[in-house]
Length: 92
Image 1 (cartoon, rainbow, N blue to C red):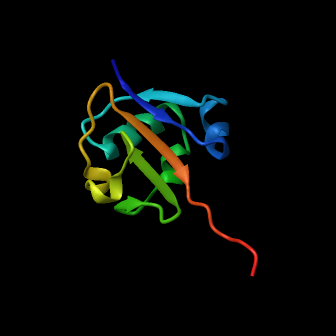
Image 2: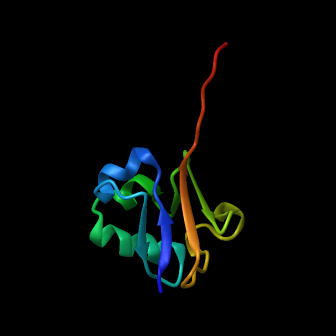
């Protein structure tokens, strides 16, 4: 068993069009490192310095990882990680 990572449309060019990919690791950071080995460039779009990029939202089993520990958030087999780009803008 592995951890399922759901990929938004805008990043699927890095996963050969896959909506979801499988990965492994004990923490979210390790999971992203594992995914980077098979999908180069993906981690760069999600991580900046010691944390997540400002305009990327990541959820572990529907909970925002920013409130769970960021990249240090523990993950286990069977978990689902959802990556969502933040949406901003509007009419003035």
